[in-house]
Length: 128
Image 1 (spheres, rainbow, N blue to C red):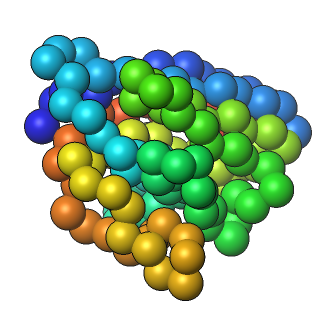
Image 2: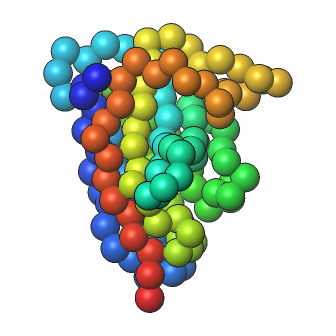
Image 3: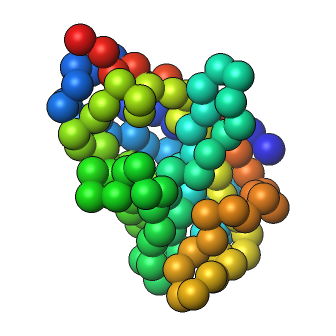
């Protein structure tokens, strides 16, 4: 735990954009499968986007067409967020696993729970 560090959060108006980043801090173990989650007070953490080592990605319905997940060969993870809405406000966390993503119908699973590593989170606030 604690191998990942997120950055890029902040406050933005509705319709605005933010780019979140996540990097490994020490002794980086390869993480073929990585993901972004978000959580608001009183709610469970939910998967936003998941990406496998071959670039195959999957998204929550609420962010499809607005968010884009990407990772490079050094397992640096990004989340480009456009058209932000107030309901996107949350603490955003990145997660990584030593194994390839579990696939469901050819897409990375959005319900995987065995993540090897988590970051501490970065806050995103969308308000006018």
